[in-house]
Image (cartoon, rainbow, N blue to C red; front, side):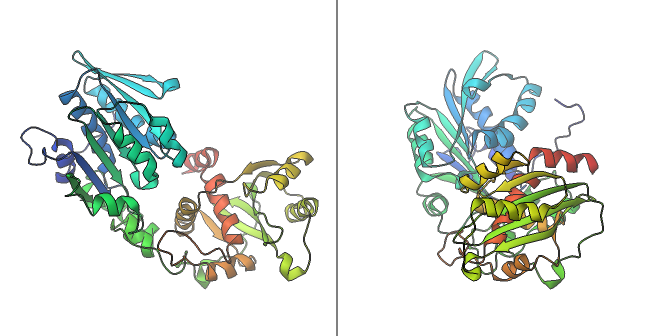
Length: 417
């Protein structure tokens, strides 16, 4: 435990999460707890600590599960922050990384926690056959319903309980309709959090977070509301949002590509200067407009022309473009990375990067500017952008989600701040 780490007194809502299961609590009759609301509102940390306290209050030699969208995110959000606090409080924690398991003991009592990722429908099979005394779902709204219901079905031990936390999504989401709207029917204790419920956040930090979002995402992540996205995907991108190409020299170069044969192909050239990545040039090839299609080798030639004599560190490409990725690799000149294609998370990351100035689009990138003005959310009720005018938007998203958000890029920025 870092001796300089300061744990602030808990807020009223955090204390309710910590004690809801206690014998004399008015909430002890519930079978589940649901905490939703704003980002950085302090719900996750207090829930994870409460989960461990409860299991040692109620059980011995029992099995439990902590579930995230991925095992990695569960470790980042829950396990890594929780372990030093438990050790400081006198718990012994043994981590079995190869088995994705924690063995926790305290004053002669020992319990096991298994860590699972619920990223898609196939994840439900991972948890089949287990017998659990309780399960904690971190970011439950990002998990498929089949995985969550399979995990709940594993909790067959007398006295088992369910623990859920999440940030809001769209109002037709299955978890909102089936659990939050039916909390009383499910015998679930529901608490809604805002940033003001996290005593560790200063007023300046709260204002900074408030400045990073706009429109529907502001209502979700700052106000904690389950609202539908609508209108422009990036409504804050106005004529004044674009910049001139800065004078060199630049510290690093990268390229992002949304590949298309029948559909347009978009190539973006990015240059790093003073902690900001500028989109300094682009190529946009629309085969329908031009009247012919390019081969992989012709697109590779376009890539070389865009790069010129610059030394490019990485190229990230639409992961479905397997043949073009192989073409780049076969030439052996550039490091190519299949892009992270999580659309909604990528849009969130891109919006934040644009608003906080970590990326800037230069005025000569006319097709990007055109698409920013046309890129819209579908009115289907789910979080889906319309598949039109989205090719430069996709390649920008690939750059942010794959290169800007990578560990190496994070270290570069952290070292300079």
